Image (cartoon, rainbow, N blue to C red; front, top):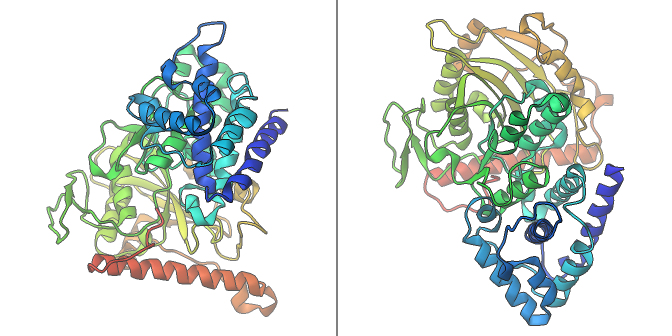
Length: 499
């Protein structure tokens, strides 16, 4: 029933998006306005419930003031609420930080408030219903290519498979340093609820809801979506501390270590900030951030995220991170980082992802699975198991989207929760020893062995439209690389960054 109810809610809210689109309100802007209004409605429901009423927002900034206002006065009051709540601390401040009204027609705003939101009982709706409805709206927003929202969205099938491999527990401390709308955090929470729900102690429940699961997000608008997404799923409290930090995760050393990191850092290749690692190497950029815990100096954001995530982990902490191909083969800082990762951490598994699964075109990515270990002389990585899910695999966002069952063979080969010595090689799953990896030129981890069927058999060629799309994606990837180089050389660029 919850799925049916969730879809009804999504359809009801989504239909109105088409009306507002004619006024220039993008999909993601619409979801953002829904976030503000849903929060106010739920706060109103909590303030007026019979048992333990809870005042979250001041009366003068309440949902009732929107119901009472008409015409231009409604628009004025809505702006007043947004600016007033933006000054609050905690979850409130994160959700309303730099909030703006994007619905300029008071009549359409009134209809959204009265007909679409006020008629639903959001607090009475099950957590799974309202949470699933909101997540589905975020997914629909990600499909809106013009808004660029897709850059924050990892395919749910991939997110779920990664979580199924990592087996989060009620005692884990979980974070995502580039959390987007919070997909990984919610997937981890859902896994814990499904597999440990009936056995959770009151302390474990409180811990999971109030600080064991956190995220960091650089973009205000995305951070508010993450905070609301978590709130609707039962993580955090409306008037409690924010579980989403709004800042650049790379800007400083971690405040605390965690036992599990799940992440898909932004795909943009370069950064305007050059990180200075332990070698103390300087650069020509105006602004530098010194991170004594970093192994190498680089302006490559993905390489810096690898270093940051490595630093985030406590001893025996584990990570699963989506990273583009350049992390596997880039020289200089890339080689230094790969050597350190192989020696000081147990980089035990890599999943090579197919193209066509991300909303950002031209992305060739992998998932790296690694664990932090105590210092010792001999390398911690004994074998790197590589699963090639790219060769002879073709997906598209519309006609042939990635589904969870497509990744089941990888999860089966991974053997979640079992000793990796029990793993068995298959056609797509092979192990490479530490000595083999270190002997490769620049410790290049871009490893392939399967033959592309289309190169040997004309009948195996893809349809022309798929080939054309792959060419477009390859060109987009190349353009991003050139834009990054131009940016590094000081030339102005536009649209080069996907993250």
